[in-house]
Length: 245
Image (cartoon, rainbow, N blue to C red):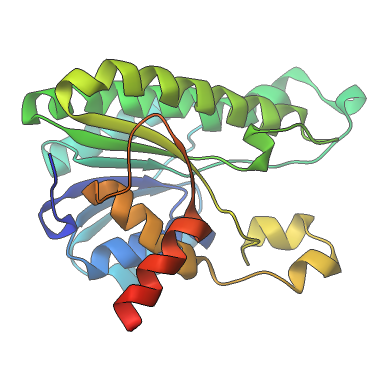
């Protein structure tokens, strides 16, 4: 089932800044109705301001199961059902594994994996009833290979990769796609600013340049499939080039 974004109801997490905010702005420009989730109330309010009247903000700590369930209930009450879920929220708190503790490790995992499960499980019945939908998890190289001082982050991203593959198999009979998206290019975001060295910062781009990929996945435009890991930069560039030709 292909559905233009102007007809879609969408949840986006981690929407207060960076890539999540860029996706929200791009989806709003396309006419999607949005519910945006983030812990950062000030940044979230700014994103909603740029998105206009079709966007609703919900401040929530996605590491907290009860808060997440409460935000999901409000989102579904606002939207009725969800056509596309973009789970972008993540925590990258670099530390040696020897210095890791239970609370910090599972806060990262809970924002990534636990919230990803809760959100997907909540929107799934509506997608089945509607005959389709799109679930998008933002991943990274940390979901493909391992990095030092990123045990929790890598564990979370690797888990989302597996979850997406499983949901893609189960969703096929219902028109539901599930994919992960890696940026494919260094992005200028607050997280990147904290973790990139000067060499990488010299290469970074505005995350808005990666958003055409998310539009294509949400609308299920060719060559988008399901159960795949999609490079946002590689998919966005030819789309934007063709659009601007």
